[in-house]
Amino acid sequence: MSDSNTTNFKNSSTFILLGIPGLEAAHLWISIPFCIIYAIAVLGNFTILFIVKREPSLHGPMYYFLCMLAITDLVMSTSTLPKMLSIFWFNSREISFSACLTQMYFVLSFSGMESGILVAMAFDRYVAICNPLRYTTILTKSAVAKIGLAVVLRSGILALPYPFLAMRWPYCRTNIIPHFYCGHIAVVKLACGDIRISSYYGLFDLFSQIGMDVFFISMSYTLILRAIFHLPTKDARLKTFGTCISHVCAILALYVPDFFSSLIQRFGHNVPLHFLLLITSLYYLVPPVLHPIIYGVRTKQIRDRLLQIFTHKWT
Image (cartoon, rainbow, N blue to C red; front, top):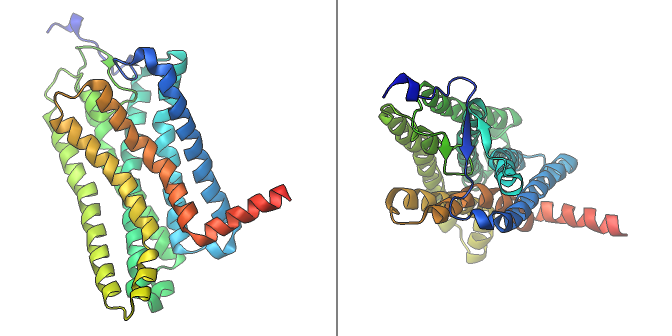
């Protein structure tokens, strides 16, 4: 292909995001539930952060990890939803190449952080149930900070090659992305060069982050269940496992939409594109809105503090 037909997006070029192709006429109607869900996610996660900050009894490892999860959820949803809504409401489809790569990096790094934080929370439940007498000596503030830093560094570093690899390819086909955000595969598919290294790195990252996280969570819960089954009474077993329910629900809220989205992308070749994108959007909508609801309903200290705030406000 001649140089004259090659568009060099490494300069001040732009991509065009189509939103949800095939459903352009329904964009305004689709935006209503998306906007409501995003507002609930922002309100819910800020509420979690506010309550934990204001309530001294919640200044413990589990709630510190919960705050990390809330911040990650806020960044994850804010990385994609505002741009999606601007496409739906104002037909603002353009995004610069640098902004596109920045969005790609934030989505990939913070999705990895979210998974890593769930591993940290699984470790918290393991220590609380299997080594309760050593809980405060193992999960000190310093240890929690180191775990949080390790999660951030791991995800931040592993996500770095994605935009750098995308930056090196020549883009000569089109600058139109049939998506509502700059996903890694959606962007590099527009490149003219051999993008196999991007695909291989994506698989490596998937197994090294999500694969290892699922393994460690599974190992933690294997040990937790073994400890629970050794408890003397059924009531004790149920009460102990009840402390893990919120975390189990948070895991399902993150991994189930991701699993179905990945499954459909890889094997659903005959699935309409608009249906695929709606399924993909669940990964960015469901966890941020469900996590604060799960912990708000299931955690007595948070629930009581929230009720106290509302009853004080209305009295």
